[in-house]
Image (cartoon, rainbow, N blue to C red; front, side, top):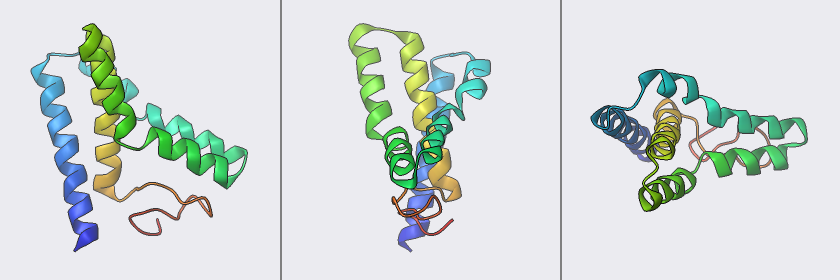
Length: 115
């Protein structure tokens, strides 16, 4: 049941981000170009699993894009707001399909289950 709730939560975040992005009339080409950008953080696994998990988790926790969104509101930067929403949508999409935060033992060990 908990795993299902986390998938539903991811869907809700992803859907909400799509709505907010469209409501603000941001560029959809930018959305599709940047949607997978946070996955570049997986390059940390080339160094070792601990570094990879740390970088991946920094880029895949909701807190980081929320800080970006807050800064965008604070300084009225619409491009930064769009990037923060895209980033948040990426995390929601990942959770929706079952990708979670990583444990340092291996890439496939996540807080949702073994991928």
